[in-house]
Image 1: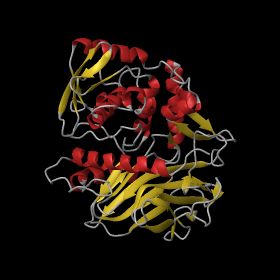
Image 2: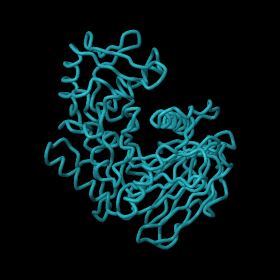
Image 3: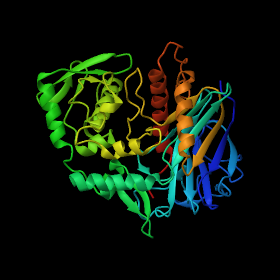
Image 4: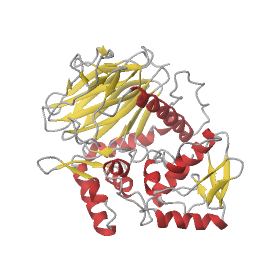
Length: 440
């Protein structure tokens, strides 16, 4: 069992003395009500339900990161579906709706008061079983954020993230890809009022802003996949109690006998991983969800034409090799200093034997989490990557659920333990979306 609190060191590796952090989530000590940490870095604030929408916070929750090079240490209680937000050269605006529900900053609402600010976040859950943290590019890329997790035995796990200036590198590569295929990748770039790069949206967020973006982009690839599996068998390892399941295209649908079938997904379905055939399952919901996650991952990485054993036959070197692929995800990975980062909703899917792409750290006995804003040096990146690899087998993970089952046995592989962590994290994020109002 973890301690009741954990310390987080927030390191300002930027050139700004006007940088702030915010910590939000669901309070596991208070029946999952919304929670923020106040500006002192330790006092819990649970907003009360207001009588009207869009009300300001009653207390200051902007945690100053101090001068460049400073480290500010905060203490948090057990929190589910948490985020550590950062904003450079300004403060973020959080509002409260009746419920209470927290109105968070949005990158897809130009009228949001935070829209033109330079901000980003990492995600976490800290419960009685573990601390789980990941850097996420599922919605957008902006500020470089790095993670370093020290456990009580002295073992270290790291995700080194983007280097300083990483956003500009991502944007340059998006423009180059758009110049090559004219698919619209440069439209994912959002500029600040002064003309500098503010963020790069994921395709899913880009489609929210412009629903015609990438329309039909994946169709020829999907047609080729359907043609291939009209005569061949696709095997999907659910990496759960259902084991391997096999499917073929029958009457226009990719059909898994006795389980269910998938219609052809659109480009928007593939980028979102949750719409069209990848959502609203009617029968065998859990098993269909497991199959759908692995299909969605294979479509984003464009590996279905070269590998009929998903995801156990996957190799990272084969990801994104087709001309039609999720180039945003490809670019995010190749621009990160350790090639790791969560760039689409099922970027944690991978073979049980390894090949992890997700930017996560997790431990059942956390001592100190260090979150660095602004990018780590190339020397630190190399050192941290080596430490992460060395300590890979020392990671201890248990499910992130309010009533968690027993931990996986020591013989369980790292991939299965990571899968348990991510599955639990998604459940908390689902609960978070119910409690936190995102629409203005």
